[in-house]
Length: 555
Image 1: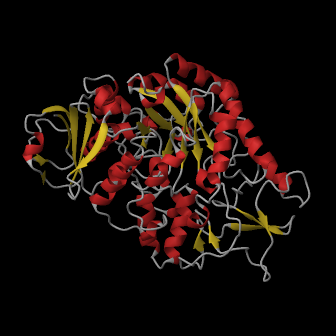
Image 2: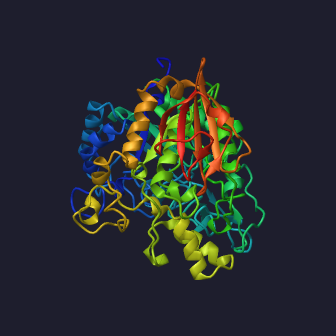
């Protein structure tokens, strides 16, 4: 255990600041609200808190459109509030981790405001500009992640600019060394403030192809998805190794990059001693319903074996060189009890089952706010009620594909990122104790039974189970096995049960989880002579698992 770094021996908690705790009555969360709940996070066994962006932003994409990398948006508080959060976190051995959004800025950033004025100013080449085709149309037929063309016309320059995401999020030109240095300087600014690391957003898109050309049409809109065209372009790791040298090296921090599209087999190139980052978020296990791109209306049913294969591939790829960030929720996904389990499942038991997998695998567990309470998806009645820009883009794509408005709404109700952005549920009071004002998104209707206040008093709650798991993971009798043990998948072809073994020396743990709403059976010989370390049901029975039952056996 002593060979592990601090971030390998703790859990990380993701805070979505706008939805965590409002201390002013504005209806939006703030930095002081995070500071207020540090003791709650400490009791949960959290050693680092990852904050989604707090920088000044027009909020087109809820803070991922940044207009200043070295300031705090006034809606969240002040730099003094941020410094207090960092200091109070350190008192509790909790590090604060910032979110770096370096593929793009806001179109309100002064860099872009200058760049768009002419073709020969000091920042003319800080973004990606191209002339129109001969007929005046966009340079390529690329579709942005949020839907619609990836190109927007700029009258001032009489050129198009590229945006992988929204039109208000123009892509930076990483080929320009001045751009890269400005980004490195901003990251070092936060290191000087004492942050404990960085999560790096959408990093796979920073390197663009040498030649821009049309891609194959893959939708009714006549466009081609940008993701497979620009993601992980050869040469990207050269940029990232420079990033590591200029910022990360020499600091006792961790870095975790969002790298959608990096295959598990390629993880050793990105993480570990010869890689760039401490950990890498790849999404093969969270995109099990998608065959190619993340177009929500094209989601398919998926067998459990697909999920198991993805998780096992990531475990295997980082076994010898690297470390894995284990996650099932974040600000871009829906709630895991809805995502991974069939309709009608007992949500409380499903939440505990997912927690068992989360803390049972090798790597650093990442817990998203409210996940530890078992918070579930919500559903708004009208598309107008959704705040998330991606939801609106996906709704339009569904209509373009021929779905009715009712069908399209049902699609986004399930997948919308707003499912995880509803306010944190603290108490049984009005607005779940999140705010004394009107919340920016409605509070989930189940807050009276699913909230921290109620679950704190219930030793059978999801919150209590999370605390048990984190204790066993980091301090319990089997902690060494859970932290450092090897991984081996069992019952590989079983479509009901995810089973894996963690082994250290001559000691092993066996994790068994039923992902169905039916009783699942397995060979009882697997657990002959074993003792139960932890489970989400009382009195586990060898050879069978109740719906959403999870058990960790010591064998």
